[in-house]
Structures are given as structure tokens and as C-alpha cells.
Length: 352
Image (cartoon, rainbow, N blue to C red):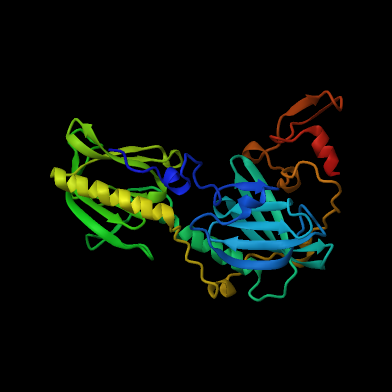
């Protein structure tokens, strides 16, 4: 009695998990810049210069509840999509822009796996609050909404012995006498089912709990266990690939809980709620750090583009953040630092 896979419900076939808020991609197909289900456009700034990788080239910068995207006005294929989860820091510094001269620009540091990137965006609009304040407020809202998207163990989930609801969360059912089958004897507690997640906590120790967002549920089914029939929840690889069992008695209640969760998973798949509560007014109060004026960066003009990734590598970025070990380059006849993954000597020369 398998329940629906969220990926299958969303796309009608097996698909990758949500990547928009976690990955940095360059020069993507236009379809990858389109909003996925549950993604909302919150702010648009046009024109904005990509001063680091395409100095002198304006485009449209869009902020959604999952990511930042930039697309060149001249070449549709020249684009950036940067997940909010990948952003590590923001700052405002003076920079030399080919379109605006010396001006304050937004520096965005991002990380993906062991790779670190630096982006510089110069806002050519006169909007207030500006791009820097808007992105600062959006990142803060994204951080505050992680329980909507991430599996949590042993969190502070209860207030006065009741589930503390998230903003826009609606509780549908509470089932008492549900045993978590993670131990040999089982652990008796209560199960909550809401519009965005399922939560279980122990009756004896409320801090022994688990919160599983529907976004991270791969399957939900009824299966046999050594304790009899149980509700089995399998989570996504991104959340650890857990297989959790819950004993729900009597059988009629078990079947009802399974049916309800299956229906809610389907409803969530049709309209995911990522929980990012962005307040445009709050962005007026956000002020990313701004160093002294003499820290201005002068960027050299860009030539022909080679590897798009290389243009945005943060200085000194390599695995672990240290300089890479020297290797012999047969092309140059010299010992050099190993190029970043996906970059060749020819591509690096083409950037100059």
C-alpha cells in the first residue's frame, strides 16, 4: 500500500529534488529560469549590471522565495541562478562599473560543495529600498523558514504540550498513542499531521521528537513490521534517507492516517508551501555591511568568455579554501595550481 512519491506527484515521473534554492548554475536554458511550483517572484530590478562576470552588460535581476536570478538583456543565454541556501554573505562596496562609473555595488559570496563564488551586482535603478536591502531581508526570511523544508530532530516543537505552528501552517489531526519504532520496545507518543509536515514527539520526553516536511518525504506506506502493521515514512536522500516506522492502533486509525497523509502529500505537491515570508517593508531597514571608501575594487574589462564558472570563482577558492597542490602542465611546460573542476587551461586563457 504505497503512497505517492512527491517527485512523481509533482512531475508525473521520477525527478530530481528541488534544486532551485541550493544550487548555483550559469548560462542555463530559459526553462530553468522559470518559476517552479510554489516559487514566487518577489522583486524585480531592471537594469542591473553583472559587474564581476559581465562588466558593462545590463540585465534583469529577479528575487524569488527560493533564489536570485540574473539574465542578460542582450544575450538570453547569459544568465545566473543562485539558490538562497548557497549564499554565505552579503556586503556593499564601491566598485568601478562600466555602466555607472564608481558606484556602490552588492557583493554576494556563495558556496556550492567545495567551490566558492563571488558575484558583484551594480543596481542601475534608483529604487529605494535598493537591491542590497531587499536581498538581505529575503535571506533572513529564508533562514527563518527552514522548518518548512528541512527534517528536524529533537527540536523545540511544543508550547504548553501542543505543537507550535509555523506561520501559515494548519494542523489537521492529532493522533495519540502512536509508537515510534526506532527502539526495540517502541516509544509511545503523539503524531501531528498538518498542511506542510508531520510531527511526532514522545509522551515521556517532549524533546525526543521529529519534524518531517512533506518536501522531504519520498514515500508513505503501510507495511509489516515486528510490531505488526506500521506506517512507514521514507525521506529523501537530501534529508538523510531515513526510513521511519510508526505503530498506529487500531487498524482503522492506521488506514485513516495513511489516507490523510497521502491526500495531503498530493495537495502539497500541487501547491508547495516553502514558507518564506518576505516583507518588502522590512527590506528598508536592512543594511548589509559597507567598508571604507578606499576599499574600492577596480575590475578589469572582460574579454571573450570561456568557462562561465571561472569568471566567478572567489580569489583563492579551492577545496577547503586553501591553494591547491602544484601539478605539472604539459601544455605550458610549468608547474601550476590545478584548475578548478570543469575548467581547462584553454578555457582559463580564453577569459583573459
